[in-house]
Length: 403
Image (cartoon, rainbow, N blue to C red; front, top):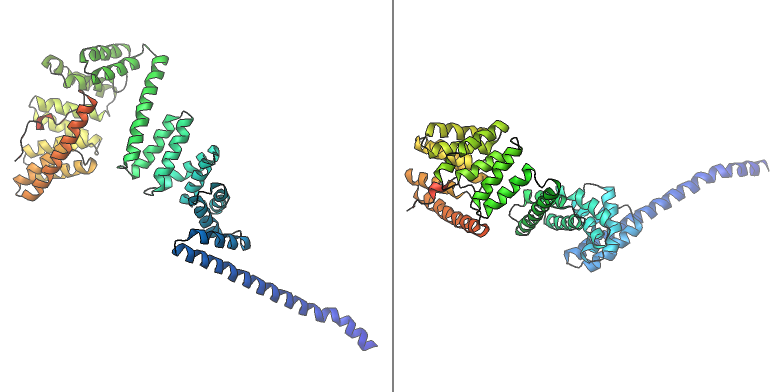
């Protein structure tokens, strides 16, 4: 009896560990089986994708997520497949879980924003697309994201934001034709909107006269443009950019008396803004026109010091250096000018001349072809937009013949 009582007393202690061991073993086996099953579904999904059968991969990812909802890779992959199937409503929850779990999945967030836009969830779409856009440099989806944001911004009447989105894309994809066209359209709309707003806010102010002068000069009505520039200066002689634009119009005039007044305007521009690099550059052009190469050299060098990425300053200083027989310094500047602006046809012209001079006929021939290509292109654009005040720093090259 005592043994029975002792045995009964020991039973809970003796059996307890046995039951616990059995339970842990069973759970471990179940967990192992589940993990194996999840991995099998993921392998099946990958195999279907390799066979270009996303329709078969989708249920495999869904099965894996039913067993392991926290699998971010499966969430992201399933969301992407559903998105490209056009099932945006089902794609959004999976994409959102993936982005929430790993915020640096920028392409996934881009697709999330695009899916939300398709579902007319504009607020969330804007938030996700704005977050993703700067991180998509060089990605094909960046253009789609940009177009989506432009649509959202313009629908809300926010042209400035739309133009900013396009600028981000053009930084990494500067030759994308669709983005360039959109940029042109947006900035044209923005310019028109600004003029209308200015006309209402300050119809008789110096700024309005300056805008009128710019538009009139583009239409070829130089006499009226000069009148508006003078009126703008009378109203506000400290208005930024005013003297440079006025001076540029005078410099481009066929009237010698008017051309002689340009230098004073460029100097006035520098008095208002000592960092007005374009005005400094034009002082060099004025000095070169009157044959003062020392003053031209100093002005161009100063302009280049103020703005090392000014392709015109590089080209103009290179011309002076060639006349001084400093050919290697000139070459370096011309090459840099073309790096900055591959359409700078005058830099190609000068580089071609320099290569012929230094016995490099093949290089000269190649650069001559680039010169002719870009010169013809720019002349066509200049004619198309009829802009007689376009700054033609390289006008002396127009009449030269290359062999």
